Image (cartoon, rainbow, N blue to C red; front, side, top):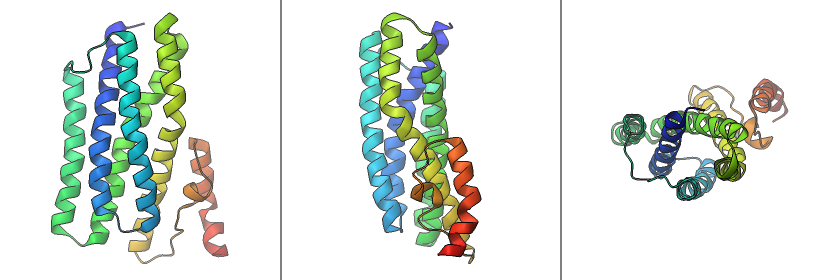
Length: 200
């Protein structure tokens, strides 16, 4: 196993979660839909806890959470750019447009976050000893929440766009209604949205 790249992944994971807190705080300033607001308030709490969980992994593996790497700087820059994009939308457009931008920014952030935790789970399966245990425990606490964050917000983004375009939307989205936590579940929920729309 490439020890240097494993540490880089963990540094990026910590930075992603820290940036995620900022992304959700800004997204909550953009949100218009009450149900989405409740969802994002919960996701913000999850993400704040994820920062703590990654820091606990760093303590167990004797890593310095303040260490800077080129990859970590890139992750920080992307997170700051997502926050700036939402702030631009708040300043320059109607509230509904800012909400759409926020959903897209959350999906961008959660895509990286989801990948980090998928890779951490794979590492946990290959690592040995204390490292394996630390990664397994963290992954078990976080993985399902990360799935929910990504797939549910993707559904919200799609349906709010559809609503904005003047077409019939399914709100809350089927990913939310079916409590989707897998890529297969998200695909099925998306396929079934037509039937849900007709029934509503």
